[in-house]
Image (cartoon, rainbow, N blue to C red; front, side, top):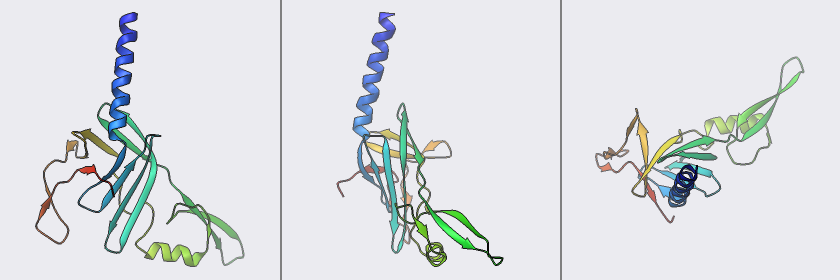
Length: 163
């Protein structure tokens, strides 16, 4: 029993140490930024030119793999039907504040480039050598990828960043 308790405590301390190493700000060369917080929350943003997207939520860890779970933020749209009946509809918010919005704002949100989860956030990343690697079709994405509007290849992983 003492042996099992010792193994459990050592394993727990190793996992906590790995958690501390992953906490921080990351970015990649494709417009993505990821803030991993010690309280098991995260914020992901993607920006390119005039387009942008964001997601926030919680993360969990199993070994060297980190799983990200979105916490949606909804706005309420009151709709007026032609027979005079009103109904409420929930829409993903374009900002981090849940509020009642007008039909005009809802239409503008659909047409605009901003908003929550317009670009899929990475739901699973592997932490190795201080980097967070994406998983594509069950394999780590480690080979340089072509950039947008160029033939130059860029490293595909997230790396720590101060900005």
